[in-house]
Length: 384
Ligand code: NZQ
Ligand code: ZN
Image (tube, rainbow, N blue to C red; front, side):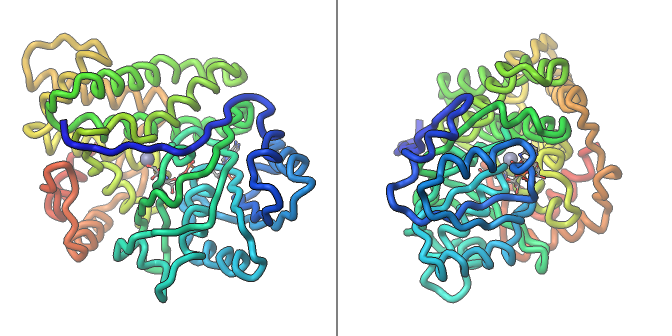
């Protein structure tokens, strides 16, 4: 196992009615900026509950953070934080609202000229305004990690940054808020969580049996629970189980001391920047292409996954890889995600653009850093 340090400081407050605890979770006397997205929180009751819980606080609001949060929007919030002397940020919404708020927190304290450098040049974030959240969409795991993904439509970019300074101080997860989610978003979230686990697992044999088994437990649980949410969308326990799975899928536990391959995410982010395809759907499209292209490098873990998660008992190595890819695609289909390039507007031109952009950054994706622009085109040609 590789050496590692692990610290996850996020306090999770889970369950029905937990928003009322905000009054004790937000630091006493703090002036709060409450951030949210396009208005879902006003329909599902989260907004009213937050306002009621924070009655005794001075709260300024900033709405309109888009899915795939935009740099230009977030910079408007940074101005407000500075002007209003805000000392605590509270994100109420999905991963986009929370990621956007993490960026606002970091950009407010940024000493350089342009906070976009945090994303483009990887400038380290040492300090951020403290933040917490009420997360309303099970998908990203952002509620329990120190990552954020920000988009800039002017330059067709979608980039991630990480810092211990942007871990939420607390995350309230009330699964009953997810009853209002369109099933399309439920499906996106399950696909996202599933691929988060895969990116920390499907690398190469690494003699980390506990991490392997933890990943397989999560994948199995997702495969078992997913059909239940479509059959019984009003079942609280199913919603609660799915949320906790999504949170655990990217809170750092699974990858301690091992390898990770974020190629599917890296390529998926580029596709979203180019075409606007939903994050979860971009992953369902790209993953089969990554596995087909990297079958020699990833074969052993793909076969192990097929055997342990999907019960595939095919003895021939290559046939077992193909069967696992098929089973994974069928799982996405069972969520209503029939991912094809044509459906998501991933034309040859889009593929060329992605390859060019990635090469211009000198980026190489994957745990072996062996995926460059040419490989990305090969992968995208193997997706359907
Ligand atoms: O904007 P509002 O009106 O709130 O509506 C949102 C949005 O339209 C809606 N929604 C959220 N909660 C709802 C709800 N509608 C009804 N009821 C609810 N309870 O759902 C739509 C999508 O929301 P969004 O926040 O964009 O989705 P998600 O949570 O999937 O976040 C996606 C973003 O997170 C990034 C993605 O790249 C993308 O930008 N990721 C962040 C990661 C992280 N921080 O660790 C890791 C992931 O791999 C991912 O890259
Ligand atoms: Zn993701």
